[in-house]
Length: 83
Image (cartoon, rainbow, N blue to C red; front, side, top):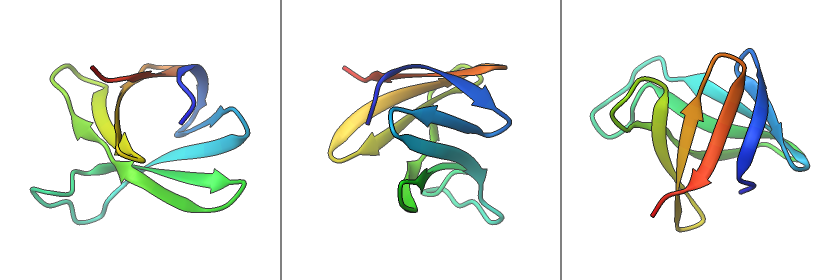
């Protein structure tokens, strides 16, 4: 997963060679929050649920055994590796 600041267009952003989309579940549960992340290109792939991490727009997710923080702002997404 590429880290850094990425331009957010609606619910989509491009990180490196991949396009990602933040989607909403129709039926969230305790273990599956409403928001989740998918990769559209180069091939479709479910990435992770986005777990709220305190402040509004801040989420944690796990990808390939690494935890990340995703901060969603009005026109950008910031992804960093979590400590």
